[in-house]
Length: 289
Image 1 (cartoon, rainbow, N blue to C red):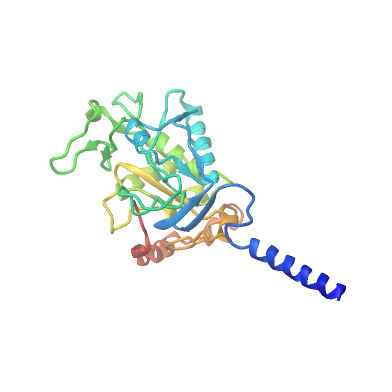
Image 2 (tube, one colour):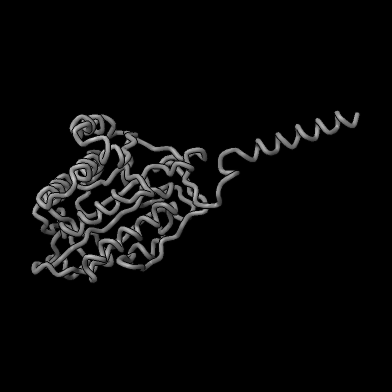
């Protein structure tokens, strides 16, 4: 009888352990991204500081309060901004929205729901090449020549918007820093085609590594079912590996582009044209915000 009682107790304890090992129950205590970028949530998020080494959250986005993301994304943003600042003490990255504190829907975005998306305001310079602080309440649109423009009869609150020029060197340095960060894997960088072309031309002219250029060519994309991304980068990272067990889901083309495949597999083995064709077929699955 005593043995049977012990067996029942052991079975019950095992069931308790098994039930506690389910999604969102046993974690390492860090952030957890669940669901899709366009239908998800965020648990125990990391909070981006409003200012840091090489970055700031401008007024408009400070008031909105969407400074929450996975620990991996928030830390990588800080490193990237610091890296770009290292080449120019005055270069400051404007970081706009990540996600609400608990993720989920908002009136401003269809995505940004699970802590893996962030909008980054382009670096800009004046006509003499002097670095300019990010605008406090605007995202300035730039054409393929790097000049600002307004859409339709719109205007900007930024009093110096006409003086701004797209800072190709630092915007490429930002892309490079994010793609080279070993702790995250970038799935998409939404940006307009003319600006993508400008960035890739700069990287080629400055003899950047071929694997890095092709990696950037693969992830930079302008979704056809959304307004063109000519005023900011929208960056999305893949689900952190540990979060997949807890229900994190990558949406759209899931091409696990590990950086080692470029470095050691040989750039000739990668066909960006074929991959981009696949991406365009799945554009309907993308959820820009």
